[in-house]
Length: 117
Image (tube, rainbow, N blue to C red; front, side, top):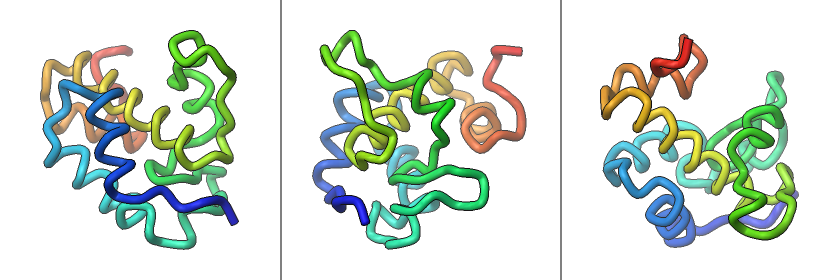
């Protein structure tokens, strides 16, 4: 099982990588997806292959992990790296939707995308 990410670490990650997203939105998403990374099931891929605090898949991880910014490749099985990619994904959806929460949710949860097609 992967190393747990504390709620404090999640807060710091989202503050850094999703600065435009209100803390309440990030908190609601993390509560829904992994109970702030305390749900042991969040550390193993689900039937869709998603895992981690934000329950994102490898394709999303590869899109949103900031390898150039951090100067290293990310690991989708590393929970901190997974949280960073999830934060960037939420940030992307937030900016593209101009803060429209319904669009952010549709883009994040796979029921459409936030103004990108």
